[in-house]
Length: 417
Image (cartoon, rainbow, N blue to C red; front, side, top):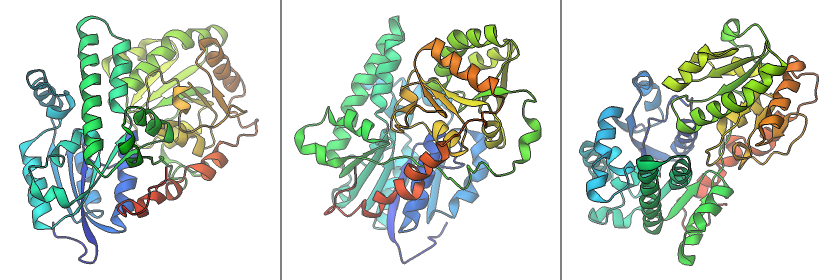
């Protein structure tokens, strides 16, 4: 595909997953950053497609890029590639996302377009532009968006495992942390999804690296998540008051959150309200999640065309995250649609809204259950004065949160923390 503009400075954008459609956490962030960078730069995008469903959106994505290169990623093969890490002493993440064809395209694109600005989304893609062996990299400005401190997720996973699994996860935590630190030392700026994430990462960094680390908040498309909109899928909704959890249901942290809720909170809710309904809404539900559909009052929808009506009509939206890093888009989206949210402390990290009539923050199963029961009793919670959308508009529009990108590659000026 030919560049769509000769007036913009070229920029290489590497992403571990195609940043479209923006229907899950990492893709929402990467797409909005891509769209923002496209305003100023001629973007050359390299990415993987790990879900065949997303391939239909390649043509839509091309309008945001001067050129687009993608590779299909087969998860089983990628996992086998990841096992090479045990022979090389690397974190599993690196061989999982390495492909020689991607490396060749990166080097060719940098040379052909005389690219001097690189934006890397996620630590797994830094391997393509972190080696000083490629001489042109020495003159490039390199920015990485780690998003979350991924190594700390592996630390959290390790705490929940035993035996060989615990050893594998602990190994990945240690080696990935070392790699993250090495990338930070080589790159010009390291971005994280919130000041809290940036602060966590800074604890590991020497003083001379700390000025490179910044928070860049997530945002919400408040026009898309507008509570007064009419939605085509409303006829598919449950016809009784319900609680909802939304998210990619093959993602460990989401699976873990739903299992915690079903095991510890849902029995309390059913004991007090036998007619209660819990809808789990999101694509690619794991076998564990699919099995929950056999339980009383639990509905597993799988992928839906539009998640908004399921949020809009829910009595409350829950986010009982037990393993988490960064800002939870699912919480921001629910708040933008002005729905009550019942969340764990981890799920509210970085959003920092306070408990009120529309926000309940608790890690206690009894309190979590009681909050859900209260909202169910009100049928649709519109009887309360809910100010969640106002909070989002004040703090989390993409226009506000991505403003630091305007100065991202001006190294004389600091990126806002």
